[in-house]
Image (cartoon, rainbow, N blue to C red):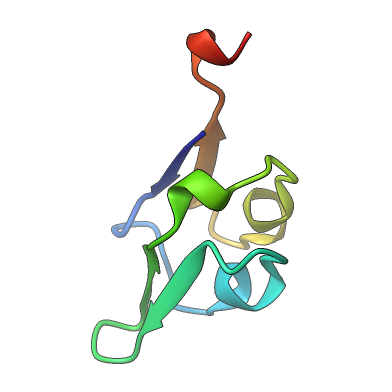
Length: 66
C-alpha cells in the first residue's frame, strides 16, 4: 500500500495516529505531523483516510496488488 500524507493540508490533529489499529504512524511532536513509519503494515482498513478531517491522507493500492 502507498500511504500518502499531504503535510500542507494536515492540521496536526493526530487523529490518524490515534485511530490506526496497526500503528502505521508515529507522531512527531516537533512538527505536529504524522510520520508513516510502517507503511508495509498497512492492511487497507482506510480508517485513517476516512477519519482525517482535513482530507490529507490518501491510501493507494498498487496495481501489482491485484
